[in-house]
Structures are given as C-alpha cells and as structure tokens.
Length: 158
Image 1 (cartoon, rainbow, N blue to C red):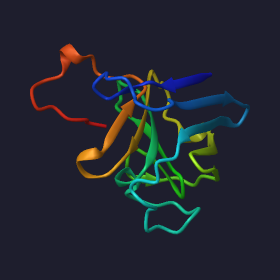
Image 2 (image 1 turned 90 degrees about the vertical axis):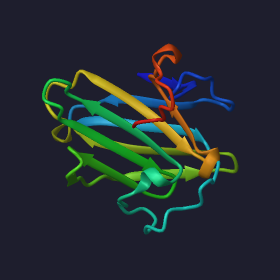
Image 3 (image 1 turned 135 degrees about the vertical axis):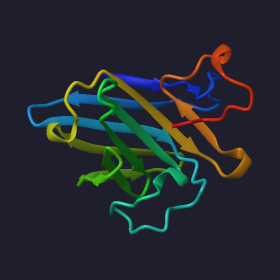
C-alpha cells in the first residue's frame, strides 16, 4: 500500500512535495517506509543517533497511529531523520530496527513492525508529518479534519 500526505491537519494543501508512506505486509510483520522532504527544522534531537528517543514529536518527525477504536488500544510509531520511538498505549517502549538515509533535500526511513506490536482489531490508522519551529511549525495529516468541522481556535491534536 502506498499513501501520500497532501494536506495539513486542517485540510490545507501542503506547499512542498508530499511525503510518501509505503506498507508491505509480511509473515512476521509490516514493513514501513517513509520518503519525505528534508527540512532540517528543528535541528536534530539531542538523543543518540539510531537510538530510541522519547519526545520526538518536538522535532522533524513522521508518526503513524494504528487504533482499535472500541478498546482505545493503539500502536504509535514515530520516525525521525536521526532516531525513532514506538509506543503501545503510550506506556510501553518497543524495540525497533530503523534505517535512515538523508540526501540534500529528502530523507528515507525504513523499519519493520512485528505483528505482536499491534493491538488486536485495529480499525483506524492515520499518519502525520511534522516539521518547522515556533510559529512556522507545520502539521501535515494523511486524513485531515474537514475545514467546516474545525472549531474556533482549534489547533492540531495528534
């Protein structure tokens, strides 16, 4: 399966080449590949390169959320140009192998998610690309909120 993130969280079109997300199912799990523009903003996280780092959402990051909407159990995977993090129910850090390649204006990351990481009965998924600093912070979403459903002063709630 291949997806492209073409809108911000509030349904505005993205201003650059869309991020691409690919999933490939295997016997033991799901291969997840991200290809995205490289903004280098904010700069690299203070975590050790190639190691899990809590708080990646504060940096240039890609996130996917897999949810069982009845039980509210989920798997959240965060991939960054330098690090990764995976949570199940936001309480259990999970081990991931993550490979990343950065060129001048893009980064490509690939990881493998074991089936045992996923809660049973997943019926919803969304993915986000987040980059920029301060007032220039951009939140892109695969499935965005329609403009007419956005409440006054509502911001992104990932």
